[in-house]
Image (cartoon, rainbow, N blue to C red; front, top):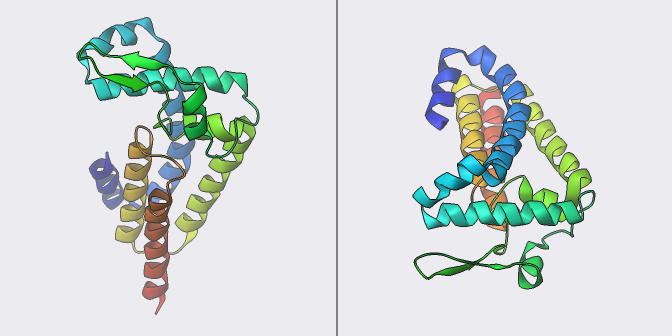
Length: 193
């Protein structure tokens, strides 16, 4: 994915920013639809036996989290509450291998489900709008095409990983992305002089 985005940016540098403005909202909507299909479609659930236990575990976590979201959809359970909820609301999943895993670990392993669970629809809307505005402002910054392409590629990779791993609020995860933004801004200042 990252390579395709980078190559597209090199081939069509003036179109990458416009494509990103359209692809960001479409990516969010697609991720929600894909998560719903993965967790609710009988055809997909039937295929789970053929996948690694770690992926199956995530699917069951997501199903559990979706059920929890429906209990408090508008404002969620509270910031960073996943770890607390996992202590009193999570069931145990037993695999054929004999391993048992919680149906909600310390976080949902999903970029959209975690804010929906913790800060609800209202908070998630503000969260996504803030991210979108930050990206648009960065894309308005005059950048060398290679720097812009690297930034968009890193962003795409960051969000791709965030849809199946890590806590959204992990300080090192946030810091990694802020460092990418900092280096882009630093490069834009460097290219002006």
